[in-house]
Length: 206
Image (cartoon, rainbow, N blue to C red; front, side):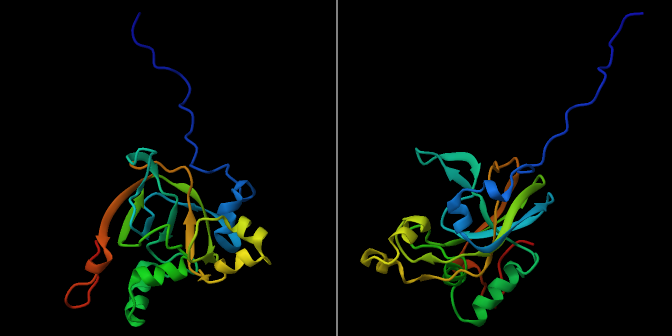
């Protein structure tokens, strides 16, 4: 008797993003963004992330339009290993009577030409991914020269301009290859100057 025959076998398993991406394959400029040990970790879907940035979740294409690719640099929204998360970071900034953007520039070693740090962006993973996690390394305050080039100039008069810098010391994720709306979704984007209400409470969605 004729009729529809159900295909046999199963669909190929989907590979978790960066599952085969090992630490030794990271570009040198990425390794230089960390201080010391880099750990490869698996993050489940629904993991909450944040970053402080004047840019958007999507990296722009050469024409300045959204490319569909998500920025790879993030921080844990909730407590993760030695990072206490966003709420603790905001409380620390408030205790020190400084802007979260200014504190982030120091602890995340964000060079001034890279970012104005005007907004807090919260996001959530929609698929599990493998990420690289560790402490933020030192960066100079200005300029765009890679650290490897600055080291090459070390000991010369030209290198003195790079001596003043940001120590880093905070924690960060590097998650390459993410696509917006596929691996990660933006939850909220809030201007830092609007982050606290009149009573000093944080205006962020849970």
